[in-house]
Image (cartoon, rainbow, N blue to C red):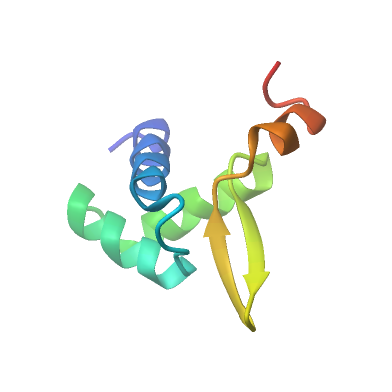
Length: 82
């Protein structure tokens, strides 16, 4: 699977849970690897790249870190969307 395609699958996976549940990194690795039929290591690498790019971000709530899609306002600040 191409890296860009995998990133789109990760983003779509997070969108399914947006506003319903905050996902931990490990939950994303497992869920996407099962859905896409790729290894968890590939998902980890793509997820980290997406966080570095600013397409996703970490948040800390209740003592646990989760990964989420940033708000449009945040993305505009970073210059990722217009």
